[in-house]
Image (cartoon, rainbow, N blue to C red; front, side):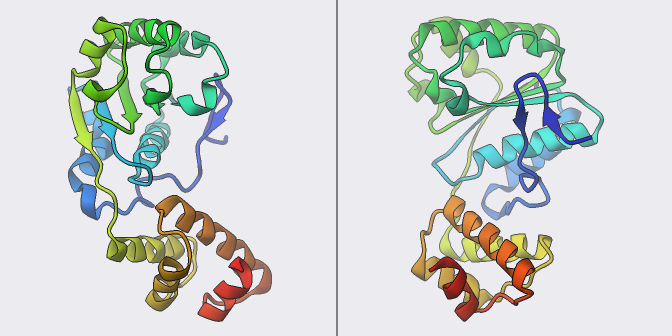
Amino acid sequence: MPKQLTLAGIRLQDNATFENFYAKQNQQVFAFLHDLFLSDENYTYLWGNTGAGCSHLLQASCHNAHDLNKQAMYLPLKEFIHLTPDVFENLEIMDLVAIDDIQCVAGKANWEEALFHLFNRLRANKCYLIIGANTPPNSLNILLPDLLSRLTWGITFKLNGLIDDDKVAALCMRATHRGMHMPEEVANYLLRHYSRTTSHLFTALDKLDLASLAQQRKLTIPFVKQVLS
């Protein structure tokens, strides 16, 4: 069975796992989420700049829940903003709910009220809740005071972005997990000549993976130039 979140039709990215996350700068939050179901703390708030890995860790937590035969739901709110807050209904039946990009609904009264009630239902049912954002809870433009209060409960982690050396290591690690060998000079070439944001670098790796398989080529600088030019 595919690891699919059937209620909302959101499918987890296959590569968004704990095993595929370069955790050097975020060891504490990585270890906490990896063992989340051993914790008595049911609510966790993650925040970080674009590319820090918030979405990856939320999805990895859902993958891990599925591996433990638990029910999990991943809700990326930036993809749901055109819908109604009804997407929050009945989620209290889950063992874990991971809500991403909460900043997208901050200041929207109907979404805030629905999220407030969901928070209460999840807490009453002792469900695990992870919320991801690009800013700490007190910096969100939340209008509902009771919701803002609840968002400050639990444990808050700030995710640290990767420095260039870590991006090279992360690229090489992901390539290895895909069965490819990426020499460091190739990874460094990508950083020098393409976008330095991790999401764009990993998208480039996806393209290189497909091209390498199709053409049975190793990852060399000339091959990278050919594929990504």
